[in-house]
Image 1 (cartoon, each protein chain N blue to C red):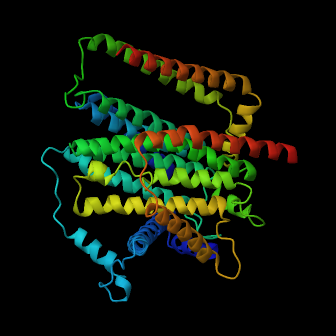
Image 2: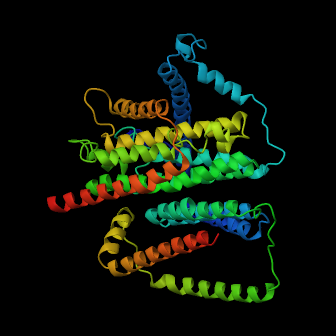
Image 3: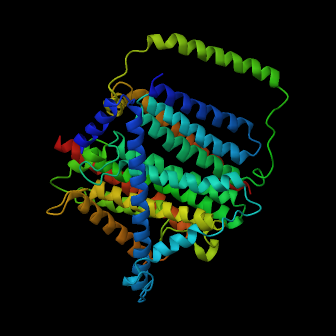
Length: 338
Length: 167
């Protein structure tokens, strides 16, 4: 991997082209690959979610498009969304309305920089690793508020405000829950966190942290049982009521991309990342990540939606104290061990 | 000009443009959204200075916390977002003097001050050494700031509560 890169740079250096050109080409290639991966993975996840929901409700789900179990359903939906008319409501703030999906998707895309798919399969092993994800994910909320406000619709503003309140409250337990892992490893770098789990996955010593992380992550992704920002029965669809066609598709894409990121970070921090016997590392990483995504879908189609006050109570009065307790116990154990 | 310099000027121009938009936009929600981009530009400047931790915290606190609360407050205040805000008031001359004085002070301070700055620590240890310093050399100011923030938080909660009792 590194040798190919060196040869790539050397070829340009030999031609007398400045170092910035091959680097820009490399950046473009990597970014395109990440976007390609996101699109394929999201299309698979949407089809999978429809299948899981159908089987939980004793239905078949999509069966026709593409032949085998309707595998091409997402592809067909994607093409349909692409060729739909681009509608901007008359009362909308056009600039902000157009900018909002871009902000949400940019935040979702940026988070893929730190996902370690394998020992060398990471866009960039940042020193601040996990912290980068936590900070960049807060941009999603800004995008959602922009979408909700610019639509000039009561339901979308309410949805956006709920989403902001939820994200701000659940970000705190989320951050505190992963501190246990970071304290044990002594580094924020994703690669080093995975390498520290060669002998034991952190899900065993940090089981409480894992559960708190998963709960808070569900809320961060606005998924059931924490989907009050979109609650169909009261808010129609929340912040994206007025969006249609490709702009709506970008929100949808970002939402599922975020789900993958959250699951991938759970895999990295708690499930030993790419470690596993026999199979290649990247396959292990994907298996574990999609397993967590499966659990998230399973929960969505099994649990009922929480009320706003229940949601806030759970976040501040249950999850946060538990997360702090977990952090304190981890600290005491680390000090006693020396 | 090196690549870093080009990137610096691009980011600086972006940040300044967004900052101008914050001050000059007529719609207060547009101001708040432009503020998000300003904070983001500042975070990019921190990255150029190898202060990755500071950049992440800048985005986390200012973009994820402060601007979201700001937008929250704007949207919960009735009709403030519909009305255009006045960009200038009557004291343009006076404020121009103050602004130029502050600008001159900052310019002199940064021109003279850069000579006195020691060489920074290696970038890869910046976050770790920051943490170590906060819990050893600067532990007292660090704790003092924590208590101050806690007091401010308790004060805010008490103020909000009292208002509700009056209703």
